[in-house]
Image 1 (cartoon, rainbow, N blue to C red):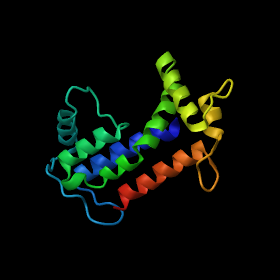
Image 2 (cartoon, one colour; image 1 turned 180 degrees about the vertical axis):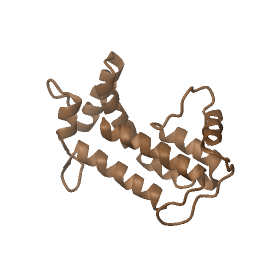
Image 3 (cartoon, one colour; image 1 turned 180 degrees about the horizontal axis):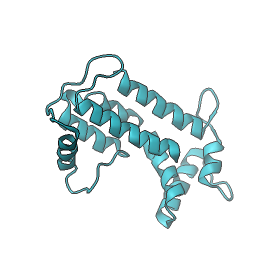
Image 4 (cartoon, rainbow, N blue to C red; image 1 turned 30 degrees about the vertical axis):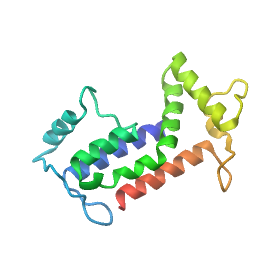
Amino acid sequence: MRAFVAWERFLEEAFLSYVMGQRPISGRSPHRYYQPPNLPSAWKFLGMLTGRRPYLDWTEAAHIVERARAVFRGGGCFPKLQAQNLVLQDMKKVRNAISHDSDDARARFEELVRRELTTLPPRCTPGSFLGTRNPTARPPASFLDTYLGVISALANDIVRP
């Protein structure tokens, strides 16, 4: 759960840094369509892009890319998120199963486990699932290691476009 929350925070901070004109570790800053004078103005501008949502969602690749395309030429480095959208959504399902005590969150988590493992192990918890070997990972890795590898690679793409 901490990894997913840190990932959300990283996306928010990277996005806002680029909106404010910061340069990535390597490469050039993305071309901005809007150049806010300060951080509160940037937040206000981004808030207008959310439409009806009362907050900025950093968990849905499609929303992030849509927002990025409205702010940066070509969406900057954020369209790369869409290539890993399924993994990001799976991570969100695990996070929701941990943080929300609801039938819906549990059902979505169990659906994920069945898809990945073909069966739901008895008394499967988000923690036990994350520690389970991912049968499609090469080299062998747990689901947690797989997920961390994906967000690490995506973060690298964002800071080194």
